[in-house]
Length: 132
Length: 83
Image (cartoon, rainbow over all chains, first blue to last red):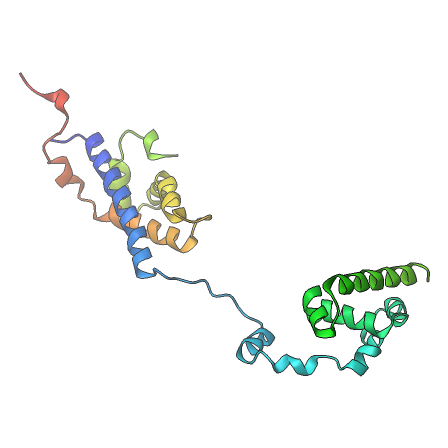
């Protein structure tokens, strides 16, 4: 005859094995369970049609007046002081998310030249913004 | 409290089989560490759904465990050998 202590140990071993089996079985049922991430509507549209957002891009004439699209008046005034090539570089870098090499290849400039122009444009904006 | 702190689980098992709520709570507490270990296995956090399923499984096992049948099994303790 087994004692109650022995039966307790049997029960513990039985439970441990059963819990482990339950975990393994659940994993086998859902081996490739992917947690769904809710996507925003614009992102789904972008995946379905990658070029539909091109309509939202500014034309060269609009980039010339880039300050018109900036809500912050002080920043808009600072940006208005820039030349068209400066605005073009900033727009392509921050909105189109192009790097210096890509911007340079489109405009026929070197990446160093683009980088210099971008830094200079930012310094001009900073100076104009702080001196207001 | 962990089951290693209790010498005899039989009264708890029998109480669970009689639907004693306190015994069910105690049983879940005794095996809580094992359940959390399995529910967290291979993941950073405890999976709450799996944890709940394992808790249900534990109580189901306790209710189905035949104490009398196991007590009737021959003892495997070598210290009780008669000369």
